[in-house]
Length: 524
Image (cartoon, rainbow, N blue to C red; front, side, top):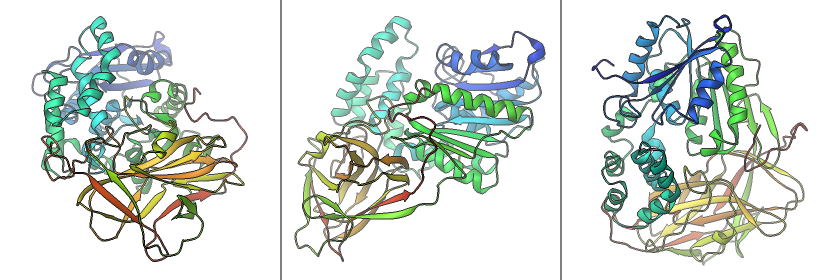
């Protein structure tokens, strides 16, 4: 590197030099052994690629100190300088990788090298601050769990296995304690010394986050890009933003979104991701246009379908929050008495399923959540025909609270014929509330789901989802040191003038009869 630090990489070469297709660069912090050696090195070397699998600064033998994301722009550029000098370099290369390995690709695209021919970015964020603080609340379980992983991933095989066995339990204990800064450091020990800085800088616009924001890369990339995401992935919003931005600029970009959580992109989704990645790279490195649709998505509960673009054309279906916990097609009469629930940060409403990094996320049974006293639940009539919802649902609430510092969590679920409820998509907002009704609009994460005939649509409203997001203590104390707790009573109003409603983007799409896509994963 330009500062004299050496980074370690493994070079995988095709056994038959006559079949060389091109070169791939893969950069990440998780080591060069399984699963990355299999997913991104051996597989592609066997298909004719030279592969450079590099450990980023401060990880697995590479020199320097690991500061997440902070050095990837310069180190990526310096690695390409080294790559140019290798006798086996084919003159053109592509990048590939998942998660952090996707962020390193965006870092390289901040100043795209002329030899770069293509990129395959799987759930790779380009803006860390937006990923962590985009809702106004801190993604507690994901960030602390990842910091714990990084702190222990080089402990040795036996110690790492012991750590993995107890990791979720230890992280759960740490997230339950206050203040968050002290409980995290007790868990991490001397590891991940940067963690508190993420928790301390709670404004995404803070200059601290500037090295972690790579949105400028979206305006510089011109090579073909394949984006792969999951409906239950924590970086879904950024994957879709990347697609829209590149598509708007006329870049040759394609999008695949499956029914996956973040971990499933390396397990149940790995087969489809590898197949589509190989097709994309083989074509682009040969200077051909990949023969694939612009957008390929899995409609959960149904099938994979091809679309000309994202988002597709849809029609809004409005469901009104009505007395008796009903979602109705028409607005109810004006009501003098709002629905109320109390959120107590001393016993925060738990997170159930959803886009989580380590904990049990995804399409989970959230029936018990609907029955809690600190959750409002509204359920629609039994559907007489299938309903396809594709895009971002929106919840509009006429809302008030008795203290200003509150959170709102909203979720759309599907209730089957036996009364069991499973999450489909949700949204979150940390906000300043008013004592008088005020309209709050929350856009949920994008979904593509078939609500089956015979099922019902449910909307849940709560004041938190802990420890997925750090609890709102009800005060204006900094999250890293907050300990004082204040309960919040929320009021949600209804009626023609003070209405609250759920708006669903619906479509009459009828998928072609290929094969059913399992909502909990697709082995492809």
